[in-house]
Image (cartoon, rainbow, N blue to C red; front, top):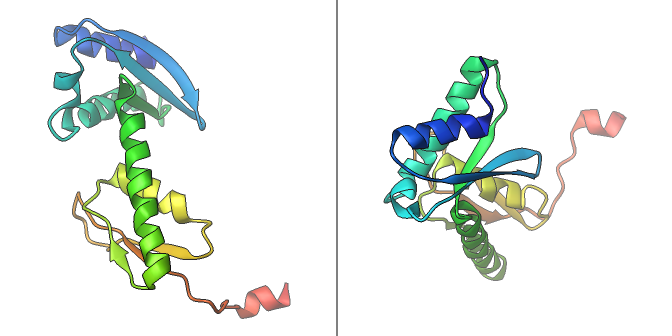
Length: 160
């Protein structure tokens, strides 16, 4: 029997003793499960670890039901959305400092979700490029640099 993402999350939280309302939203091609509750702090966790773990569990259960399964984002009282907006604001300020000084600068340590937000923010930016070290650490810093002024042309692109 396949359950919907909302049912899975509601069941998990019910077993943990939380009374919640779950709303489904569609944003940027992703299903977002918005948890509405008066007990948001224990569900977010100290460093968002509980929120991340809930999202991981829901996605693993969905993948087990029907591989590869839909990817859902779990948010609590719009916490993740507000945190993402704050991260974007901080990184844009850092990028402005890189533009002004020309020197590379690094973000604070970020998890993979946050790094993806930063990389996507600057993927089409003509002045700023991003770089993450290839190491396998859970938390990494992203380096913001000025893009080089010259355009690199490849022989394949010239012949097309």
